[in-house]
Image (cartoon, rainbow, N blue to C red; front, side, top):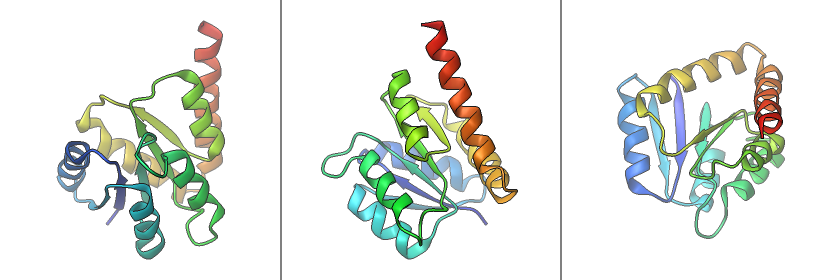
Length: 145
């Protein structure tokens, strides 16, 4: 069973994620801030982290940096989940080590298939391929502007 850690300061977003992911048979852990998210990631070792960027206190960027710097959590794939839709923010998320970037508002029905595909691809050794694909998407968006 896939375990997803949702780190977001907005309770309605956590609830939306939980309801949709649990409906697909996933286990969902929740954290309302970056510190609690780090604590849960280190204790529970989820299969993936859905991480908000803009949170009071420790930002999602800072949480991601800590997760990726820690030997025990660096292999957990991170999907940034945020209202920050600028191309530069997408690039920063992928550059930090994230494997995907979902902007709010998002279609909650699409969340579980995205997580399932990501976990399957990471387990198959395609993490670097995923990141290259996301970098290519960001490059394409930049070239359009």
